[in-house]
Length: 149
Image (cartoon, rainbow, N blue to C red; front, side, top):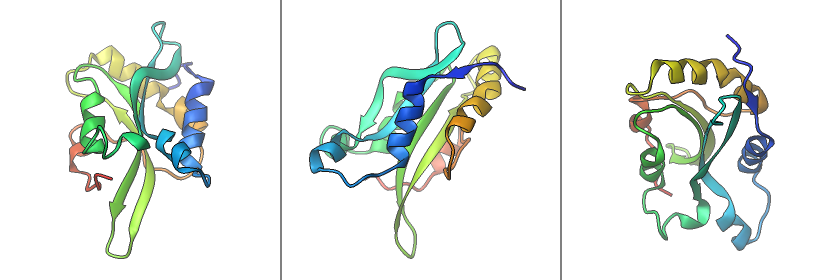
């Protein structure tokens, strides 16, 4: 079901910046986003960046000790959101990084919000082209074996 919701250009730019890791100076790396949360605009017609809801790579280990726990804490208990998280984890073979897309739809969110976010997910997924993991929600989000770095 298509909702007709648009995706703001800034959302697409942030996805591209998180997906493409260019050779950067240490200062540029610190400004790169580790996590960012998106919401619907007040009129419910556009997916936008939620003000102040981001974690920068430079914050990890300085002001934020566990970035995944901090990220989950930024998600609302009673409303839906979309989010990108640059996950780091280790396998038996190596350390890996993957960009993960989340549709956050907690039990306490209003049914109407869940319906709008679910029906708008395709709009944002079409803009987020490439390989990434997506569509995780409560309670599975807490079961991910992610490294804190």
